[in-house]
Image (cartoon, rainbow, N blue to C red; front, side, top):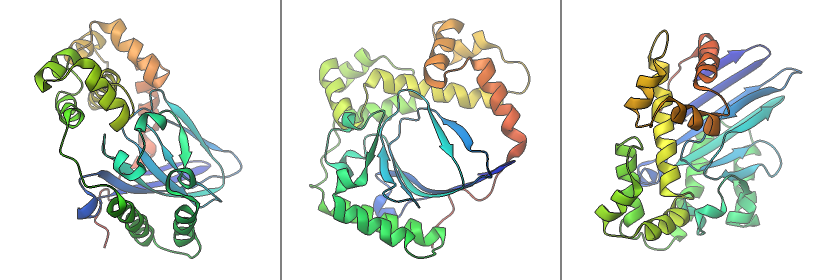
Length: 277
């Protein structure tokens, strides 16, 4: 996507990962932010994903864990980012630690991968002028290095099946019933989620439902019927929907949607998920 606003310009683009990384990555992406004297501020909502971000600033390579609340990102001057977004439950294979240790935080790659490997990645990405395609290729090379060094891939477990079921239902599932279907206790499923996903299955489902409601809201022109929206996406009532917006967006549904629509004229699509040569 291309976002243009005065005095800031943002160019964001997603690309499909290499075939060898597709079981684990949702996408790889680049972002270029150029501001004037005024910093550019934007809000990032919980999305049930973990990302690795590499930026053209000293020691600015880090992982952003699963988010349970929105974060505000402030950029000033020129900031370039090359990043990878993991599928839910996939990042543990690249970090070798329980993913709950990364939740709601930013952890440097030096800590996760070691100082030498993180420094080599930073040098490869930013020591010379390169195209986005070249930087995306470099990041994926390092991810493949981590993948080859990881233990053999395990068979899909309860958490993997639960992730698929929750996403297929847009979060409208009961964790007790899901655990029973999978033949495990709720406590066992919750433990697997904390280790392999980073948050509880209930919270994961709530964020899935919230994201589905957000997408639906933006596709409806004119006045929203919040009571109908709440019913459609499995909320008890309108106040339940509002509660999730306050928690995950720090805003009412009306205010959030008005903000999105106000920015819409400055958003122009360019190629997204474009193959990288």
